[in-house]
Image 1: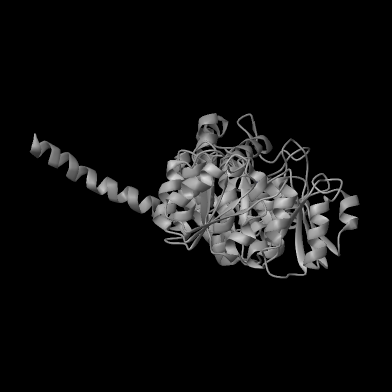
Image 2: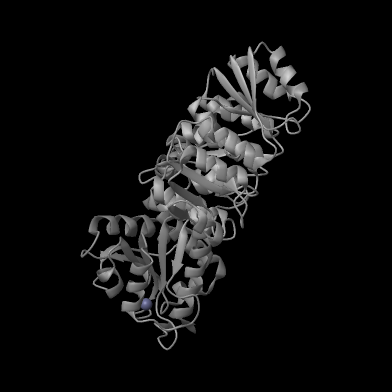
Length: 500
Ligand SMILES: [Zn+2]
């Protein structure tokens, strides 16, 4: 028995090693993702605090089910180097209680009035041996924000965000905190008295307005001192625009669900402490504005907040994938009046489009931002394809073709050219070619230099794939097969991933 087991094991070793080496490039290129999880928001807050603090002389405590109080707390928490922990209104959760005991703060600052955090909770905190428990309250969220602002040192700037929407405040929180700028709140159409008074007493001479015109109307905007708006058509875009404006060289980000505020509230002060921006995601997939920023800034390290309900494992997979946010131009060759090669009752233009669409879906699911030269049977000139890639600021250009010659010619080949990005283009072509002929089980005709318009004129790394020969009966059978088209698309996709 043991001998047999050993034999099987020894036979398996070379396979294991082979597997290791085959997958090694991807493993090494993968981005780093840390998840700060918890069975509920209170535990997530505890785990966020563990990421940033091993001890703290001040801790902030706020209601975990009412975001309004704590929206403007990030600059104040950051200034006091204080993690934010969450409580229920009438009871201090066990996780929070234990964490306060571990951190041993001399001071806890409760944010919110006695409805949000009842005095019973204050007493529970005192029983943990905390010598000073303060409260920053207010009759409403605008007053709470104003009272927090008054605890910050003088600053001629103020952030103005909508007090009934949490996402915009979270997006700007870390930046405001690092720069000592108070976050004041407004309603969309009128500025509350508490906010006006706070700006007066702080001597605000310029304002950063976060959110689009739905969040903060132009009439409110016009009443503010020297306003600059960081807008966007949704919360993802607003957060992305904050990063574009204020984090020119960020390689790290904190990512939270844009519709689950509890995780973000406590993450905002961690983002400030680590000097990372916060961006948002859907539960199941990264939204386009978030991908764009990640890709354009070549971000590689992410902390994601929350469990697998608010942030599913697919989002983590996308963040780990080195193609995340990369703009990859997929050029289905020919189209419309230009059929390309014809043979064995196949039109090249259709084969190219079928495979291009499959690659497009894989790239999009993988977290990239693919751009299709064409999505249907239309004609584009070669120059139009190149200029479309250029105007979309594509990172890569991959052109998909099928070959034709005499019936005897068969196999797969990939071309690159030497005008621009020669070395990278060759590498891209090689990563694709090495996988493609294996997947299609065709003759390996190799990587070649080819003077074709689209790869000669494209300024980004580029290659042109000849899947197989439409004019060869065996190759054509594969180009007709949806199974082989899928295999080919997967190989090209894997080649692109390996390139990064
Ligand atoms: Zn062609």
